[in-house]
Image (cartoon, rainbow, N blue to C red; front, top):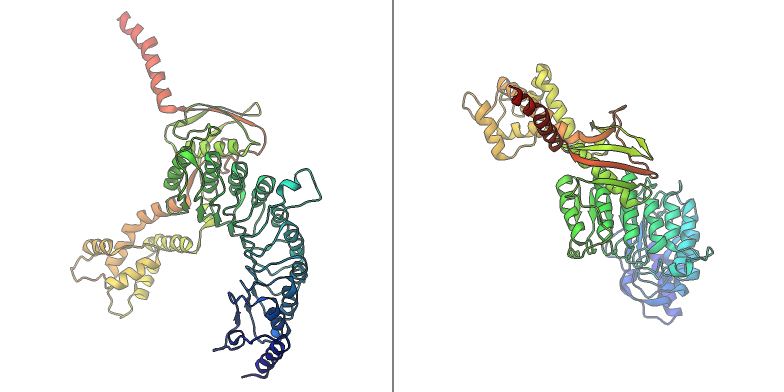
Length: 532
């Protein structure tokens, strides 16, 4: 046992004797070496907390401290935080389920405001953090360059929302966080704000801020009662965001219009991987949109809407995706109208007969046409990148005998001059052509000409050539997607602005063509037949 540990134990014991406390062995006995000091759920209170504060700074090689659920208040927390500030190796601090008030809040703010603060993760769940304390704390994060994960779940953020209306001197925690995440000082990657009261103006500001943040990849806003206006704004924001991968918004009173806006935002957002709309009153129209969106997204995004109210009718939801043929006049400064514009354009871009007619923006005529975009690849995860890279290797090897031969001999692990079933599967996985056992058996049945159950070099080269076309199709499906573009520049997607009025009429081009043929027959062909 090192002298530092002995010093810690002696200080702890002396402190317990001085405060007339029974020593708690679990707080001092460490059965094995660890960089984590896990003291959660002991409920030891302020007196024992002050004793720990006296010796905490002397513990060596500590990277994580968990003091959650110990009935700690300002009387001890301020000293514990001061002691923690002396641990240069600390990366993870958890003070959840204790009562953080003025003095401990100030001490914590001083800690995180230090540019040399080593913390990467800070967890403050159910810590009685109110709007004023959150505002002071968030302001101090401006000078912090290392904190990547912040958890403020189950606190009192937003309780001053009503009082802040009309009083500029009162700022809610939600508004403070909104200002922070749009600033150049924000480096957070994970932000958890579930089970607070972020609603009304604060919820709208926070939703708007998401559009301008470029660092957060995981955001939990669950059970805040944000409301439908914030939901519509959130959908508009995630259309612009290209960093967020996981967004959790269960229990936020999101109605059909909010659900439609968010679903359309997820379709447009190529970086999103997981979206949760659980426990919201999305109504009939929202449920229909969830099902349609799931079919469009496929496996690209995990979209969930469990335990939602799917029977209510949202009178504000005038847009019906199943009844697309109509005239539209969209005020693009309204998030829901802009979401509708995106969805209609997306639908027309991928439809074979529907077309836009009489398109105008602020009274000026627009000419839009179907086109293809290939920027989806910019947002691929590592698995998708690997698959596309392998398929392109297959394409190259199919037309390059030297490369195909190299792949063959790299896969031939036993140098037998032939690939058995396992070796063939490995090389196919490498070039992005992932097959199951049934498909592999089918390939062997076709290309194993001599019936040996293996594939020689010539048979392997033939297999590569035969799969070239399928690889091309799969790359196209993964990389390309249909868009609407201005006829003057079909390489660039048309993005509806955030202001102005967009008007157009959606018509069925096939139906219009048949009507045109019928009119020609009635007014041209029939008169001619009568003449003869």
